[in-house]
Length: 336
Image 1 (cartoon, one colour):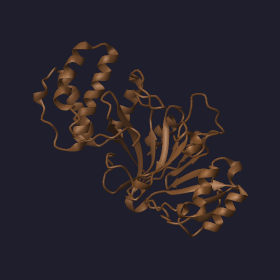
Image 2 (spheres, rainbow, N blue to C red; image 1 turned 30 degrees about the vertical axis):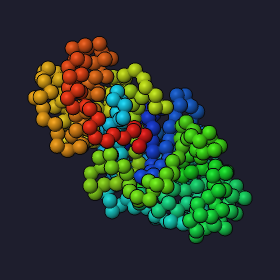
Image 3 (tube, rainbow, N blue to C red; image 1 turned 180 degrees about the horizontal axis):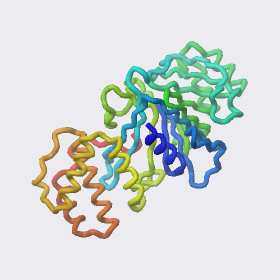
Image 4 (cartoon, rainbow, N blue to C red; image 1 turned 60 degrees about the horizontal axis):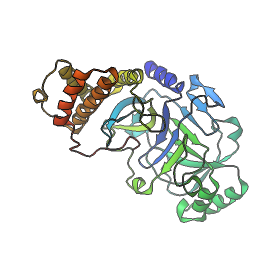
């Protein structure tokens, strides 16, 4: 646990790293810009706030990290992250299904927000409470009049979308706070860059804790996530030159906290490439997790070879990818 907390503190100091708290269909994300002013900068308590949003991670003795990589629909990319999990029986939140007033948000990250009123909007998600916070008297009156009913089947839903109150996403491992506008007509139909929230009704209906593509072991529930800097993508999700140091950093995390079959398969593939074996020397793995490891290992080897000018390895990887990386099964975008 001490090592994990040290990693979380180090990552909080890196502006390129992102953070999130959410479920399958409702999430609050915290991102920063390089040099962005910090209104709260408390690394020892894993807390940080800007004018656009805030994050606080609250480690517990039963917290477990799961590092993972995801396939991307774009063959020169992959996704990555670290899920901070709790045992299944210790993760559930209130799971309210109607708008509910919770009182003053005395745990707000910015001290001047602690007299604002918190309302759970009633998404009934397993491991999070998705809330809004406001001191707008008119909005509070509308919300109080709608309490006890589904938020978006009452006047409250439209009032929230029109006034853009702070969104506060709570789990047993912390909170994400988003102060920017809600993505929609007032933002050109897209989420603003930096801290933002997503609420996707079709996904919410499943009441799942996470995407099936994220390899969370049975019995664990992700209650917060760290998204370390990608070696191939900018913080805005655009392609960038391969960053060997950022790649190496995450591979260290994967060795510590990744699923053993995934890590072992990647190392097996890289060893085969290094010894210039033919792809026929390896049998395609039987599990989806191991097949993902194989394909990502090849994509990563290709980017590393390209960046270093290693044409011999690049040619070998091309042969292997023709054999194994043909997009023969569904892939999920990095943002999923």
